[in-house]
Structures are given as structure tokens and as C-alpha cells.
Image: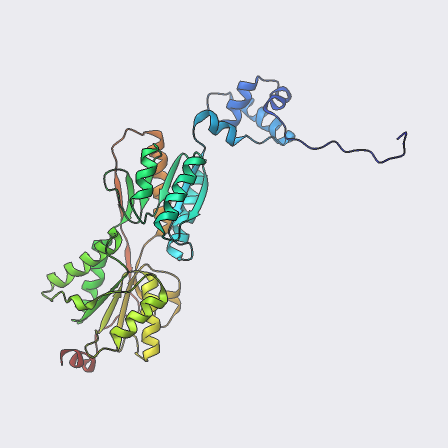
Length: 353
């Protein structure tokens, strides 16, 4: 160097589609089709363009594409609480399916707050997602997205039945099977711990519980349907009060995994042996239920399968916006474990007395 200074390294910049086209010896439009998959390109040309792009470090500008096409190759996934393993598994299933179908995922946890859910829906519209998969906590976000002509699939529960597609579990049938299992074991006072019954999940699980009682000729005692709140501590407090009462039940059916944990902790704190003094069954099979002794009888929802089905459904809707709406109902297996057994004669006598 004439002045003895170190050589200056030119600032790096992103390669352009024009440079990729020149390197591959094709037009810009051909290079674009080869890289985006939109339109026909001969296989040999496509490979040559992609090789040139790789060598130059070129990445398709998704934002520029979305401005032209009014949407991205992204799907919004909106869940209620990623701390809950059910929602985490659902989001993971959705993400894997989206990747298989050539989409990316934008994931938002609204923590079950309707205002945050609506804000997330607005963010998805601003980001031009192609569609949204949501575990809704109100009708607001779904209604907003549909007004914006964004395809929506409601998962796990429904607030806009008939207005959009949905993927759900057979909540009523599964709850009926679990309650009937407890009845068949000889239980006559079966409590239901439930977080709410305004949502389709809670309402349908309560209906299944009531169906089984009615079919067995047992009374539907309202004092045995216990609203618990939304977290483990609230469920534990409700279960402690229930299990400390003179007429405590011989069995508890918890409407989700969080409530089941609260009931399990309450029984342990009171020194009640499961299943000798209390049978416990739950909706939502999560790992801790098979790790404790005895294991907990539970309805095993495949949350990952729900997420995969929801993404497939929203992609189908993107491809055919005019098709009739549909609701996909997935079955769920009941995992029978050691937490449920026939009530002991002493416990049965105490309940009758």
C-alpha cells in the first residue's frame, strides 16, 4: 500500500436476484421461479439457479414477496400457555407440519388473556401471515381475523362454530368413558374438578361426566362439580376443601392435567392413599402422570397430532378459500393406570353414612 495502511475490506452486502440470474445464465424471472417454486422451471435449470444462489449466499426476500402477494409463507400459531405441556406439544406439532409444507411459524403465547389474544391477531395481520391456528379464549380474535380475510382454524375448543374450521378432541365421549370406568369400579360419589364450562372443552367434559352418571342411574350432585380456578395452587386449594369435608367423594375426575396435579398434591397433603382411599383420573395425559406411583389414569390427547391436523387444515383452506367449513374430531385413548381402583369397603361405608 502506498500509505502503508492495512487494506480496507469492502462492506459485505446481500447478493441480489440479478446476480444469481447472471451467475446461472438465466433471466431474473426464471431465477425467481426456480427459487420460489412459483411457476415451471426445468429441473436442470432449477438446480443450476439454486447452486448459484448457494454460492453467492443469496436468500429470498420473504418480506418483498409478501408485499407483492399480500401474504407470506408463514402461519401464525396462537396458544394459551406454553408453560402447559399440552399447548407446548400442540405448538411443536404445528411447527413440524408447517415445515413439511414449506411454511414457517410465528408463535405467540397470549397467556389466556383475551386482550392479548386480540393484540396477537392484529400482529399476525400486520405481518401478513397466510393463516392462523389458534386455541381461542374468546370469539374476538377469530372474528377479527375472519373480517381481515385471514383463514383461521380453532384448535382444542371452538368459539366460532360454523364460521371457520376447527380441530378438536371428542371431549364428551372421552369424559363419559372415564366416568363410566369409575362407576364400573363401584364408585358412587365421583367429584368433577373443572376450571370453567363456558368453553367447549369444559362444557363437553362436564356433559360427558353427566351422561355417564345418568346412564348408571346415579344423581348428578351439583356440590360434586367443583370450579377450581386456572392453576395448580387454586386446584389444590379447592381439592383440599373438598377432601376435608365429611361427605368427601371416593373418586375425583380432574378435567385437565393442571387440575389433576392440584388434586394429587391435595391428597398427598391430607395423607390420603391413592387409590386405596381416593381414586383419581384426569383429562390430558402428561409425563408426570406415568412417573408417579401409582400412575394416574388419564385421557391421552395427542396434542402434537392436533397441531399437525390444524396446520394441514389451514393450508387446505388457503388453497381453497371457498370450500365449506369443517370440524375435525380426533379420538383420544384412555390410559388406565394404578390411580383408579374399587373403593374400599370402609371408604364406601363412610360415604354412604
